[in-house]
Length: 371
Image (cartoon, rainbow, N blue to C red; front, side, top):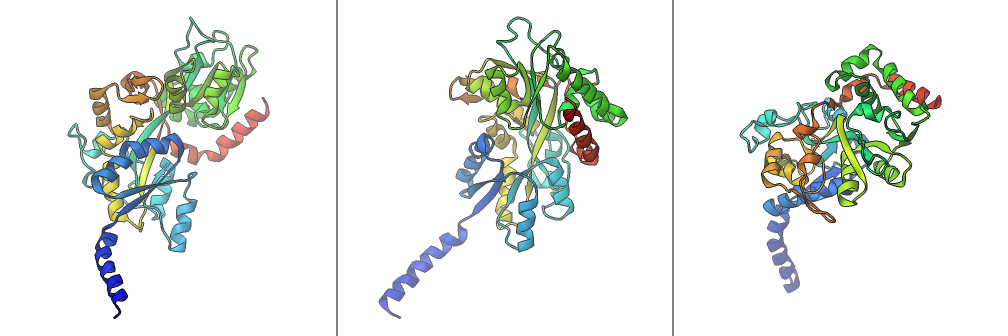
């Protein structure tokens, strides 16, 4: 063996242990401010604590990409941020790891076992809760200086609160809002929807959109509702609470949110079966979804941690959110799951939409065509 070969072999010996122990986890999420809140809130702290590199990958949702990886035998993803329905489908199809929930995930800082510490039951054995966010509405404080709307019924009352409303371009959330405005309790919305509730909801929306002092425009991108309010295109707009919060707190827009009749929606993490770093990913997932981990993400975005005990951490250290423009901000009043904001709410039912998808879409498109 030449002298050069011996040197190369010696270097390889020293490098081999470090290469063998280098660990990483590939986490797939939705990008933008949301993924940034995950990275800063629990991804970076976990990487620093464990020495495991956490790589963030953006995607546009659905199961198509992970199915393609599985079929090709080249799985590169470890953890995916998904909707409830996708946890059910992926679990049924064997794409994701099934959890032994209270053994796999730690108790909360309040001492409650994991299954009792999460805001709602998991939709499948493969899901662990991440965040809850809200479909609610905001209004222009310039348009309503003295007489501010406070209920979902006010959104649908252009006689008292005149002006154009902006609605989501699909049926989801609009049906729920309309029924709550028409007197149905948030907890009863989906039961009522089975009894001609779709028609009643659409009639309520049609009254609003056809009203001479009302009118409707529609949004499809999350940034649009605050922009429409600020520009004067609409005096009220439904949307995601995080987008409203950013406009109000970080941008100083003349807006205010209303929580009555909000639709609480949720995001979950799943662990890919056969992923390249499955053991490391499970440890990362435990930290991400711990009381401390989930509370950490709320330092960077106004979405509620799925753990009840995370709110205890936030409450104890308020102000929790550091706005780049407004400085230290109390985040709890902006949390969808705060007690003051959950007096009358709807918990999104993805199974109902899946079971009634064709009927809902056909009715919604026919409604919009007749506006």
